[in-house]
Length: 499
Image (cartoon, rainbow, N blue to C red; front, side, top):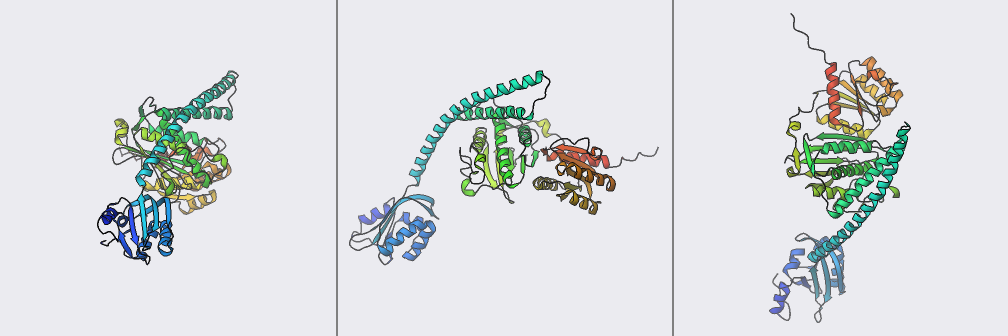
């Protein structure tokens, strides 16, 4: 913009246009006398106050209001820290001042971009805070480890005393010992994070750690439906086994807690990436993570549970921080997104340089597939049935879902020609399962039965009608193998050629 500044035409204009600040001068009627390059980059080359006001309102309503009072009423302003979202420069942090010039009454706006200084100061503050947290975590971990060691010794002593009297230990005593072991493991991880210990690194079977963590969580009284889909044969991640187990356990516990609030389930997938690495994906059916919180979700002591849970269920805010720290130490990246149907999806991706592959395992035969097999799912947990249905349909099966024994009986009657396998969740209750098994045996004798449950079927149940049993949590590949086995049993043996 080529306009003159009165009264000095030469050096004043050069200083004005070369200034690092964003500057603009307007008349009291709203005409723009001058605007330097910085101001134009941020808000565009407007000629009149109306156009400039629109650009300011889009960038920062607060700043637009201050400038409006300056231009229209001659009220000066000073603001120390303001966020401006500029189309040309992105989001910036600025200080601003507006004054009425002596004599003519023109209005001068001066904004100074402080983004770099704020970023440096914030980074220094975060570094100092991290160092302080590391010192605290190291001391806390040491104290916690000593305390848990005492608890474990007492619990093991009690177990030994019971064993000498041939008395089986109660589930509470076993739970105390397991909880103490978990707490000691957490203290080891905190200490390793505080002092950057690497421990003993070696290839770790990540699928095995997923199975162990899922079994531990599934043993709890408040377990939610959990489905494992582990499709990374022979892939091992290089790291410390205890820390990688804690990464998996924390991800699953986080998803378990989120899904429990809304009565949903958890889907855990482990698969190869196109680049040759490995990805662990954990999807829940909870509240999800808002976009503005995703950058902070892995910060120590930050938690989204406040406001959604009872005070006792808030958590420490360390679980996902541990996930992030362990992942980065092994070369992985962690991200969080949303499911199309609601809930959060956490992904940990290890590059090919962090993965060791067992070539013998990778040469195993592919997962069995029964083309065109009709499967009826009967259970009382919608989240689990939905996850099973998605997994089976992805592999080409026709799936029918019933949320009660009555509905299952109706579908079995109407779709008898299509259904070859019935999956029955024994959580329906023994009486209803017994009746449904009787109907299958009577009206569809050629249909195979897979029974799933938290414990093996009791002898009182018509176990003779059950072809396969799976204990929760189970892998999708186990279910597919069970279906394959039942179909193979149902297929007639090939006729022998005539002599």
